Image (tube, rainbow, N blue to C red; front, side, top):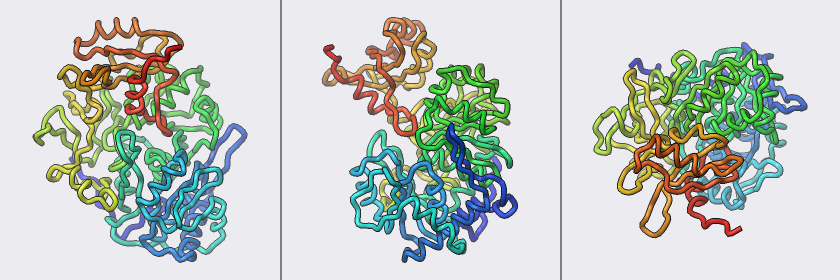
Length: 498
């Protein structure tokens, strides 16, 4: 394994993100696209706005190291403020636009921001820090450019929150080197090159969108295509065609929605990228049939972005997620910490993309390490050629009747049932002390009998769901990621007497 080249020093994340802005000054860096048209930003304008924003923030009295909370939607103000803060040595903290005022307030009190940027229409947190609007951010474009604050690549650059679907959100502190480390993904997953036009269907605050949808294209000299507010998955195919997308990035749930209707011809599209939840083999085949291109899955997390993936140069074999990205040092560990061909994925603490730690929580940070290895919580099995098959989250593993069962194994066996558009399984409590595997599925009709028959034919008895429930849709978060905690609650809820 050849290690990734060390991050140069001194270093600034924003300077690296926009290092091609001078040469590509008039080329389109960002297009916020809608059916009625696009808002276009050149590399020159983007850099001017970013560095002007840095100047404006410092003029407000903020000092290097101060935290800036972002409550912004999918508008240019988001990347301008995010990169402008980092350019000036400040620490941006993106948060989901979907948060309620109470949820945002709890996060604000966790990070103690010196400034909060709030878009019109989003819930502002109850916090004494002064406010800035998205319009205020964009108005700073006219200010003189700030100098890039260079320094140790290991110093704090930004903070992101985990999704919190299995507990309280954790504040993840990332270093400036995190963007340099993403170089391992450009060919190890994305197949991204100068001149590409990458359309990402997620929200800016999501690390999948922030990295793959914005920062990686700009580092490589590509154009970021981002759907504007209100764009639905059903509208994405025509937008991809109209704006000549060469790469699509989206969660599998979004792709599933896109495929509900026939897709137009997409002659410029080379491939798609998925992350956020497991990619079902059947969905990958459906996408291939519809577009003639492949989907390349990546496994990652807020603490390290992606580290395991298929790619155009090395597609994942059927039933496998992919390979460790070139430059990653990765191991599978047993519960006792021994290396194995099946176990928990662990990353070496020297990985340049790994977080500094959980913000102001040293004990929680230390608990994620076993010696020199960071425990991801993801379980996998190694195949004959080194590809890894994802088996689910360690805390998602089901234990029904004393047997440990991976949800993805059961879901793969049930996939393909007629008229079932999506399904997921989880462990549910049917009465005190009694747990079984439950399956929630969406579709136009009751298919419990067909699912039961399929499970009996393909799964050992202890792996078969004992409860099936038709739902209008599987519960998902703002980024279309399956929420197993909410699924469990839906399956454990009493039947509707109506």
